[in-house]
Length: 48
Image 1 (cartoon, rainbow, N blue to C red):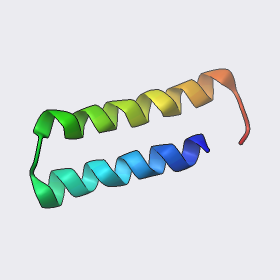
Image 2 (cartoon, rainbow, N blue to C red):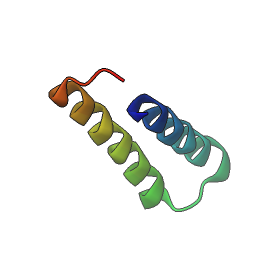
Image 3 (cartoon, rainbow, N blue to C red):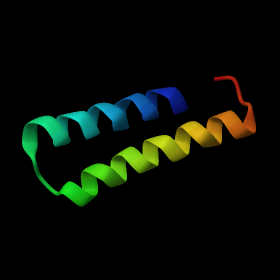
Image 4 (cartoon, helix red, strand yellow):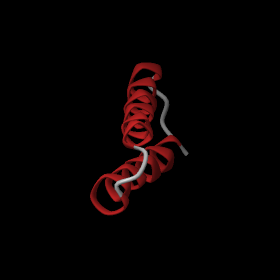
């Protein structure tokens, strides 16, 4: 579940950054959220 969320947020970030050029701050916020979720998964050590 967390990996799917990370992948979806990363894809949205890439699309927003490369294609749409909208809401620059929001796009980087999506990347930060994806990284936080990834780090949380590594810290908790859960296997999904």
